[in-house]
Length: 189
Image (cartoon, rainbow, N blue to C red; front, side):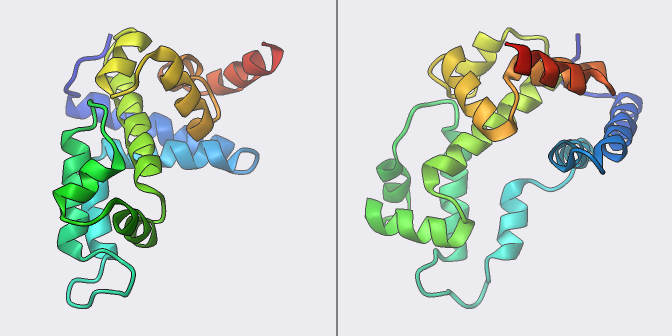
């Protein structure tokens, strides 16, 4: 069972494992290699998605049809603070003082995905982190990440990652070689 906080040695060992897996999958499964590299990047204490988005959004000049940097920041803060709750796009829009339709168009122009698609992706990322950091049941992980139930988590997770949460957890925790067996198991089912 993993604890919430990694020691430097545990984290370093896991980063090396993820890097080896990325190298192993680089030629034949680039999606898996990319996932391993993203997970290693996060374990190294990489910047949050909000911080990387701040760099992508121009500070002084506001592009037509896009959100201002302060609006993006406030919207992303609202999403992060309410990720475990059910909410609608109009609530995010109200937090920055825009109509739902204008906010949705501007958010997509700025971030590259619709507000609710972004929320779903953040929930999947949070679920991944929780599955690696704890041994909680998937039903509990689903509820803590804002999904209505485990089935909702399974659908969203499979759409985003290509594996069910259980398959992903087993392959991520077990190390190299397990992903292939998880994919084969998914094909047989």
